[in-house]
Image (tube, rainbow, N blue to C red; front, side, top):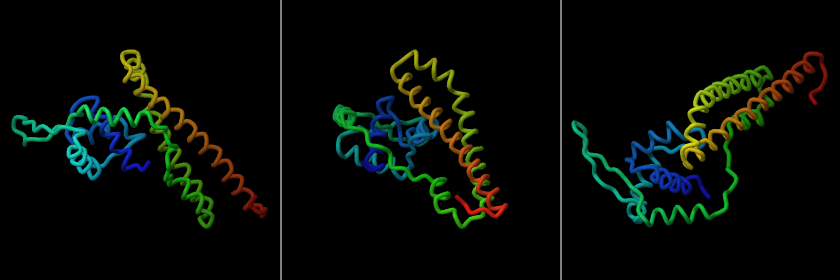
Length: 192
């Protein structure tokens, strides 16, 4: 299933939490799920319009004091049904565009020092992400005890933690391999 089609279900699923505007959806994505799912305004607004036309969401205009009127969307019974059908389907493995892997795969003409620098920088970003995950883990665990949504949300965080740990380990192994290659090159041995 394409990311664009799956984004439809992401929006429907997020609307099960509470009615939201397009802006609210984007803000929620950026704050809560950006590490495993991203939606742009260019996807959200046309998708909301299409889902409204299909009767999956209901649009209501809401006014705020001193602010322009905004459209808030809620899930309809038909939208809940479509979402329930999606939950019955098999999950596909993600189709990944992974920039670090692509750069390394085609990085044989780049000086090995640049490859090492690239992996070091990537590892630093992963470590920063891990610090963030660890900073929210205890709060997430408390929410996991309070509700099914909290438990499932915590499960996604744990996946992020474990995946990030694995990536950090991969960086360390890759750096060791690159340093071995660098040492072999210095002493005139061919690359393995």
